[in-house]
Length: 200
Image 1 (tube, rainbow, N blue to C red):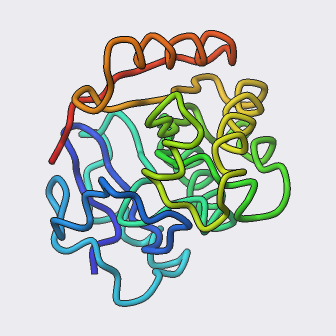
Image 2 (image 1 turned 180 degrees about the vertical axis):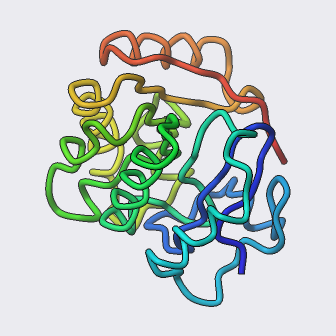
């Protein structure tokens, strides 16, 4: 069962396969692995103890960052995520990033950005599109059309507690006009806009 795996110069944490979305473009629909991993499909969710023990199998000096991102939405297990992040900070003093769909507040029915303070250095959120209706068509969130605004609200909240907040889109999916609209959204929120390369 793959818990930790290497992608480029970062170590990724595969916490869960749960996700409130069924994105039309999700890579797990077409592959079982990412980076240097075996299957990222989990037989069961790893315990906190199992996750922490797995760090001993890696030379942590090789990595620039620990990233919470696997075949699921990492904030589905926010309590475990925060404890692992605390362990990484205390033990390795390394930067921590979360790659997320930004729907943590809807998942947990409360504001969650304050919980990240001091534990997470970067939150990278999938914006996907500047259009709320198109967003729901793409991500098919089980929370419905409130999801788009909830994601933006989470991003704004994160700017108060996390040093680096990034909203991302994929380079092959939007027009230049749409990318300009996304850039304006990010400017208004006070976050960084990043256009990612397609990894299909």
